Image (tube, rainbow, N blue to C red):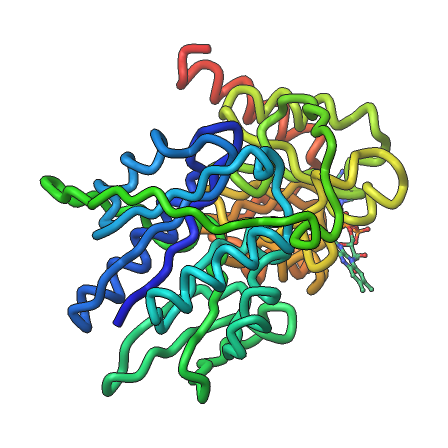
Length: 324
Ligand code: FAD
């Protein structure tokens, strides 16, 4: 069985999500003596695919074309579907990043494949490929079996461990897929750099503030705590809707899905739509003055108290402990 693992890159650098997808593909391949074919797409990506050997790729295919300087959903979907067809691959894996969520359904349509989005576990059972994904805003997990010959899955970022394989040397192959104007339904002409802040979707530690912070200026203490921990700042929808924080920081059903090692929720009630976006976090710490707030039901550590007393004290103590 061949597994295509789409390895996302940005500005010539592989994303962490790429390493997760290749490692997950290898974990499945090892159970069925399968082959992991990592695919890297961009304008000049020949050099960067080599790094994927150590995450378990057996082969790395690079598709370089100046027309692919920026992401194009239609062109990327064409490339991945053509490679999957040429290779007679059984599974196409991508990360459930913004790019993966956009591209994967298009690949599935082209391949007439079954599609499971935002999976949190994969396994082979009695020779069958099974994907587990959260449903009902994370309230339940469902196992998806596929009737189609080809299966397309996206993997929730930060859930699948990155594994390294010493001595693994993938074969590198440059592949050419002819692209014409009709393959680009819409064309990105430029990408403006954001603030350079750590993205919640990629951060290993997130400090999120909610309406309990009372006013936008009080996020200064959240930013300070995040700084000390090297964390990203997250926000509940209530504070984004109020215009206190930018939408890119929103965690939840209509924001980003995150799964960091540590998630600190400050003045966040833990509404189901918020929890849907962060319940896969490894450790959850909640600071809330209401002992009955729903966030405490999923928290590993809970502090009942006033955020305006606890957060500055926590920041000071962490500064001392971390020598900052
Ligand atoms: P609140 O619910 O108002 O909670 C504030 C909390 O702060 C309370 O628990 C309170 O006890 C605590 N508090 C107050 N003062 C202090 C203090 N001094 N110290 C400590 N704690 C204090 N929400 C999201 O977050 N993300 C989403 O993606 C999202 N998508 C949605 C999609 C839909 C279709 C709908 C209907 C809703 C969505 N929501 C989403 C909104 C969600 O239902 C909640 O309204 C929202 O999450 C509440 O935000 P909050 O916890 O910051 O505010």
